[in-house]
Image 1 (cartoon, rainbow, N blue to C red):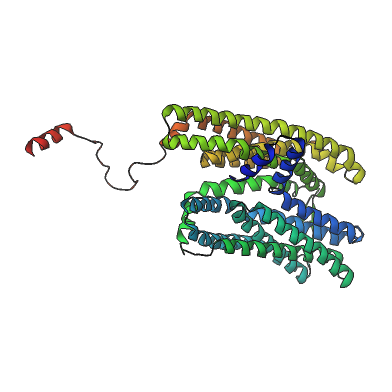
Image 2 (cartoon, rainbow, N blue to C red):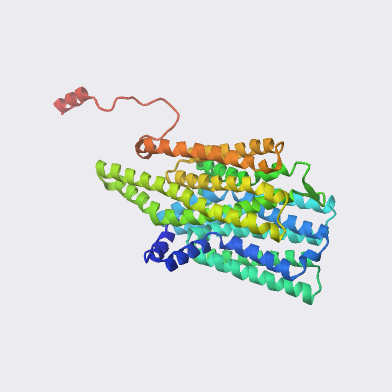
Length: 488
């Protein structure tokens, strides 16, 4: 994340209301703009193409297709991104840029292969059992693979700090999608929902192509060192588990409620629970600003403290190291508290606006009953994820994995229990899982603070580990040395 802070410090240094708004807007653009652009494109298409007048079955088939494309596109990318990001960071630090293309190709092959394992069986069921037309199934499958490619290439561009180009490419793709949907419906007289799906798929494919071309233009040399990329997955397998379980935990409570009596099955393949899924979407957007706030403040404040501590460890005195450590953890605690305070105010304001105005826009009933509990759960969840990022800073992969395991498992069991409760408590599973994960991460950070010296200075071995006879504990024999000196 280093690099954003330079721009943000330049913006916020003027300390005016206008620059604060500009800084918040900039940090929004580099974090959640792609998601907002996709949502905006969908809303424009639905409002202008007469989506509400389409038959119920076609509307739900389209909605479920888009929902599944995004959920499983994120899930299949999650095991690979953190390890590849770690590998890329090490390569850039060592300035061996020719090793980046092997990383890109190996990761791409693994990601696509894993995506196909989930996507192909589902599409076969959708066609043979659900009786969905082949052209519709194939278009949805292409959208799924295109979005996987988009998410994958975004990782490399994010590490290269090309956030603006990511947002620009999403703008191009979504503008093209909206324009093509008009052409398909009004010029070629195609069916509305399929026109929307096809136009979005073309938009995703354009974004993927633009990202791929930019990555290959940055890194032209290929060292051919593919094996060492795979070795990173063996070495940092805990990162794989952490990110996968965290992403899974984001949706596992939805999966639980997809098994209840309130679920809806479309084409004998897609399963969803509309009120709960819509409440989840609202709750996530209520707290999504936490990502913006966290990245902004960490880049502006904590990263400098962390850098100062690292420099003290390399060449400072013991006193300098202790002082830098104290300042770093004071800043860490301050950033967590500021994140909670600021996000609490933002969440309360957005929550009040939602419960006041959304019922007038057609959101009501069961959705608004579920929403408050889920909003509380996502509030804690994003704070928990901030702690996971801090654990990454200290290379505590064990702590981050333990946090993700507790969070995912707690959310699963809590959601199963919540299905037996009244509607207003349906989101309690996410609250329980997030609180448990937050607790584990909190105490893990405190443990790191108390044992940071051992964590930093005593992690590596003086002698290479291996099998065989244990070497002698004797380091120096002064009597033997004296006899040798006398003989010499």
